[in-house]
Length: 249
Image (cartoon, rainbow, N blue to C red; front, side, top):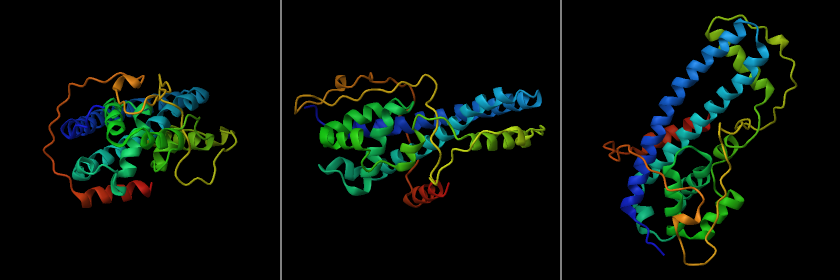
């Protein structure tokens, strides 16, 4: 079995953070442009087209929050890297972070998470990863809900249209929106559609015990030209505050 490489793992965590920041910047820019286009549709009374287009905005907003949570987990693992490096059994203080990254790896656009998933398999064994793949055990519930493949609640779609119309000073008669509400008592969020070109990736655990190869997964090892340097120290208090802010959303 290939040995777990602490140095390579830390590099991949830093690369993942860089990748996430890049995606956040691009998505926020595209998001604003898409909102402007939806406002034009509303102004031209193309309500049905606007309703369809706004679903993508909702999905991207949820993905932005997913990326923020994943970034926080990567930073947490770097801050507590001694636990990851020296303990053969996963410490409870980093278990949720590791399992959430494993869960999100095939469902997000962050290719470095796929490499980290392979590393965690080598480090903790296939039973550890199997709990995530089959049971979502100790995976962040917000991540699970936001990555579900379902259409947004029509009531939420209407609320987005109202806010976009206000932001761009467009007249929009929300009373014309007569879709029934699908809201539930779930205080976390409504499930969203899959990303464009999303394909559910099958996660295959090694058949033979004692093996751990990246080829066991159907996703190829990613290549990334971004910088692996990270000069910013991790602040535990700052991480805690950011987690608390996310929980209140």
